Image (cartoon, rainbow, N blue to C red; front, side, top):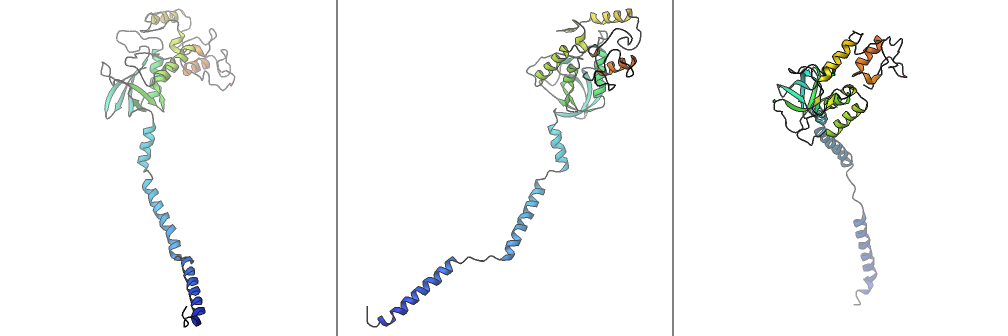
Length: 285
């Protein structure tokens, strides 16, 4: 080391250490953020999120359409006329159409070549009660029309398959399976099986239901039975006659009328009111 540098060696060391210390402090000191930017940023995010939610929220009309899409069936319709238990008229897509209910067959009431068949009037009355003037959903399944140019399908009312309800009540048989598979075939066959096991409606007459329809001579035999009976009232059975149970009636309404004619609710000789004694009989029909 040169002789002239030695006197300044200590000063040089001090300067180097001082510079190193200042450099380290500058590199590690955190940068302070603008306080205003800290408060404004969340507000911007909230506003953006709010705008996004408004954009994503469905309108009232869209919500209604979404609910309608979840309803069973393919298209809205209005029932304008009930012809009989399995045939109705509807207004659909702005025009009147005749509908043959799919996979069901009810006894005849208006056939030009056949007499009124047992449980035909009950099926017609039930269809009128459930469908007349109602807004319904119509569902296609397979060919849309039969050879009479009638629409073929299921009618859904209040979220229930009316075709299946006819089977459940024992007012129709499962029939006319021309183009399987059908969407609701299994559930409808099960409904028919339940009615058959409980001997409801058409299943309460031995041999009445056949593979081809309904035994035609049953109409005359029923009329003969009524004619030979001393009871001449409007009810299917004499309220003062032999004991009856719920299986003898085609509908809750028929059982209720019989129950009241027999003296209910003051007395219930046929024990139709069960254990609850609420004045409503055969509620399972």
